[in-house]
Amino acid sequence: MSERIQKINSLVQQHVGEIISQELGLKPGIFVTISKVDTTSDLRYTRVFISIFPEKEINYVEKTLQKEMYRIQGALNRKLSMRPLPRIKFKTDMTESKADEIEKLIEQTKKL
Image (cartoon, rainbow, N blue to C red; front, side):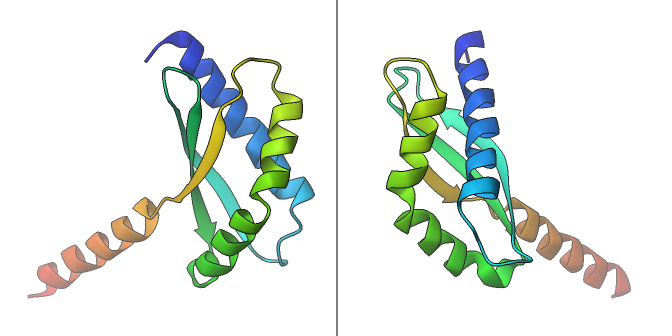
Protein backbone atom coordinates (compact mmCIF):
# COMPACT_ATOMS: atom_id res chain seq x y z
CA MET A 1 0.00 0.00 0.00
CA SER A 2 1.39 3.38 -0.98
CA GLU A 3 2.12 6.12 1.52
CA ARG A 4 -0.50 8.33 -0.16
CA ILE A 5 -3.23 5.70 0.29
CA GLN A 6 -2.22 5.28 3.94
CA LYS A 7 -2.53 9.04 4.51
CA ILE A 8 -5.92 9.11 2.78
CA ASN A 9 -7.11 6.15 4.89
CA SER A 10 -6.01 7.98 8.02
CA LEU A 11 -7.79 11.20 6.99
CA VAL A 12 -10.99 9.36 6.06
CA GLN A 13 -10.91 7.47 9.37
CA GLN A 14 -10.49 10.68 11.35
CA HIS A 15 -13.11 12.69 9.45
CA VAL A 16 -15.77 9.95 9.26
CA GLY A 17 -15.31 9.30 12.98
CA GLU A 18 -15.89 12.99 13.70
CA ILE A 19 -18.92 13.13 11.41
CA ILE A 20 -20.53 10.08 13.03
CA SER A 21 -19.90 11.25 16.59
CA GLN A 22 -20.74 14.94 16.13
CA GLU A 23 -23.30 15.18 13.34
CA LEU A 24 -25.22 11.91 13.24
CA GLY A 25 -27.10 12.01 16.53
CA LEU A 26 -27.28 8.31 17.37
CA LYS A 27 -29.18 7.14 20.44
CA PRO A 28 -27.30 7.70 23.73
CA GLY A 29 -25.13 4.82 24.87
CA ILE A 30 -24.17 3.65 21.38
CA PHE A 31 -20.51 3.71 20.48
CA VAL A 32 -19.36 3.49 16.87
CA THR A 33 -15.65 3.07 16.26
CA ILE A 34 -13.90 3.20 12.90
CA SER A 35 -11.70 0.11 13.09
CA LYS A 36 -10.20 0.24 9.59
CA VAL A 37 -10.39 2.17 6.33
CA ASP A 38 -9.47 0.64 2.99
CA THR A 39 -9.28 2.95 -0.04
CA THR A 40 -8.82 1.60 -3.56
CA SER A 41 -5.65 2.54 -5.41
CA ASP A 42 -7.64 4.60 -7.94
CA LEU A 43 -9.13 6.60 -4.99
CA ARG A 44 -12.70 6.06 -6.21
CA TYR A 45 -13.98 3.95 -3.31
CA THR A 46 -13.23 3.52 0.35
CA ARG A 47 -14.57 0.87 2.69
CA VAL A 48 -15.05 2.04 6.25
CA PHE A 49 -15.10 -0.81 8.76
CA ILE A 50 -17.03 0.03 11.92
CA SER A 51 -17.35 -1.63 15.31
CA ILE A 52 -20.62 -1.08 17.14
CA PHE A 53 -21.24 -1.37 20.88
CA PRO A 54 -23.57 -2.67 22.18
CA GLU A 55 -23.94 -5.36 19.54
CA LYS A 56 -27.72 -5.45 19.90
CA GLU A 57 -27.79 -2.01 18.19
CA ILE A 58 -25.98 -3.15 15.02
CA ASN A 59 -29.16 -3.12 12.89
CA TYR A 60 -30.16 0.34 14.14
CA VAL A 61 -26.72 1.80 13.41
CA GLU A 62 -26.45 0.15 9.98
CA LYS A 63 -29.89 1.48 8.98
CA THR A 64 -29.06 4.95 10.28
CA LEU A 65 -25.75 5.04 8.41
CA GLN A 66 -27.47 3.88 5.22
CA LYS A 67 -30.21 6.50 5.62
CA GLU A 68 -27.69 9.28 6.31
CA MET A 69 -25.13 8.17 3.68
CA TYR A 70 -25.71 11.19 1.45
CA ARG A 71 -25.17 13.59 4.35
CA ILE A 72 -22.08 11.71 5.61
CA GLN A 73 -20.59 11.58 2.11
CA GLY A 74 -21.22 15.31 1.61
CA ALA A 75 -19.63 16.22 4.93
CA LEU A 76 -16.59 14.08 4.10
CA ASN A 77 -16.30 15.64 0.65
CA ARG A 78 -16.25 19.13 2.21
CA LYS A 79 -13.43 18.10 4.57
CA LEU A 80 -11.23 16.46 1.93
CA SER A 81 -9.48 18.65 -0.61
CA MET A 82 -8.66 16.07 -3.24
CA ARG A 83 -9.87 14.67 -6.52
CA PRO A 84 -11.34 12.18 -7.09
CA LEU A 85 -13.32 12.08 -3.88
CA PRO A 86 -13.71 8.47 -2.71
CA ARG A 87 -17.25 7.15 -2.29
CA ILE A 88 -17.65 5.54 1.13
CA LYS A 89 -19.24 2.21 1.90
CA PHE A 90 -19.72 1.02 5.47
CA LYS A 91 -18.94 -2.54 6.56
CA THR A 92 -19.61 -3.83 10.05
CA ASP A 93 -16.46 -5.24 11.62
CA MET A 94 -17.35 -8.32 13.64
CA THR A 95 -13.75 -9.16 14.60
CA GLU A 96 -14.27 -8.24 18.25
CA SER A 97 -17.34 -10.46 18.75
CA LYS A 98 -15.79 -13.35 16.84
CA ALA A 99 -12.69 -13.12 19.04
CA ASP A 100 -14.94 -13.26 22.12
CA GLU A 101 -16.68 -16.36 20.77
CA ILE A 102 -13.36 -18.08 20.08
CA GLU A 103 -12.10 -17.19 23.54
CA LYS A 104 -15.23 -18.69 25.13
CA LEU A 105 -14.80 -21.88 23.10
CA ILE A 106 -11.17 -22.16 24.20
CA GLU A 107 -12.21 -21.74 27.83
CA GLN A 108 -14.88 -24.43 27.41
CA THR A 109 -12.37 -26.88 25.95
CA LYS A 110 -9.96 -26.23 28.84
CA LYS A 111 -12.69 -27.27 31.27
CA LEU A 112 -13.13 -30.63 29.51
